[in-house]
Length: 269
Image (cartoon, rainbow, N blue to C red; front, top):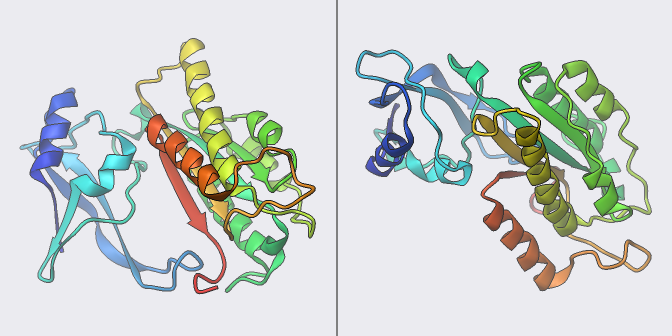
């Protein structure tokens, strides 16, 4: 398989580049077949790439908006050309120059207690995935906050997120997560809406405290097993229905943040 940038991507990169102008994308590891369960049962391919200059050495640059990355990268093979369905910034030769600010909003609705392939429950699978994510963080460079959501105290819980820079502190937040309870429903739209607001405020706070906002890569990661479900007895005025969906979508689009949704459970259900 051959990997290259489209013309649109080269133009976008060259307009914001600093240092050496990227000439092409180069594979840093061969494409591999990976298991994407429980998100999907379909086979997935993963590849690591880095921009390089005409001399073949890594070329640092300012990334385009996170939402644009998938459309700007083209994967070419004998079967044709496709765009990846997901692209993210990972550790590489210039990783120390880019800090990640990640807010993980985790579903603890009652249905998360249901069984999951390869795990005791969907919640157990979620916690295992988050632990792997934490293990890959750059201590002292990345900022991570982990908060639960269901359908009670949604806004204050997410707004009280505490961002930490060590694996130990992040794991402590994960281990302090309350277990899913039968009374918990899924205020998904509200969690996304409030999560965007919380992450934007953290980025502003870091810039105010003399941390460089230019090099920070913000990520809102929402992990859930279900659709938006709000019932009587839940928090008042939670986003729900078609209007709630539109409000959450508009919040994401206006933010220009990297918002990632990860699903657990049976996709056919």
